[in-house]
Image (cartoon, rainbow, N blue to C red; front, top):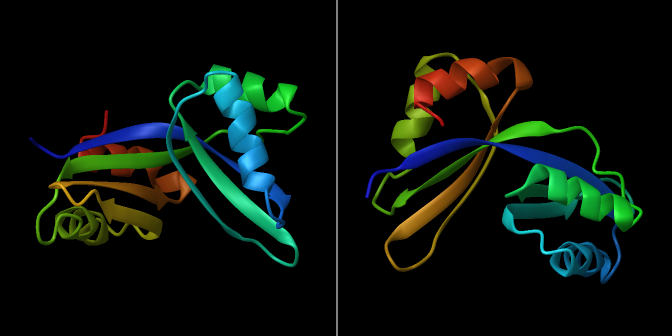
Length: 138
């Protein structure tokens, strides 16, 4: 199976850096039937954390967070990469962007251990259109 790259909406949500906060938000999304394609979280300053959500359905995601009393913030763009895992699976993609003068601001990638991999790839907002064309993102 070929590698696919899709341009997706994502939302960064600031939360208190305390036990159970991510579980509270994920529970609210689950209870409203909101499916996530990906999420990542990390500390963001003193006693704060950031969770980046990549929802399957943006409207349903925003509704569910609003009902939970959380501001989804501004919609941004991330590239969701999925494909067969192989040595250097991400190298070709990153090389293509680098040769075009596009700086990747963040990348998270993982193998499923069964021959497939997925990655989230962020570029600056002004580079999204060029990156999308270059990578053939849908």
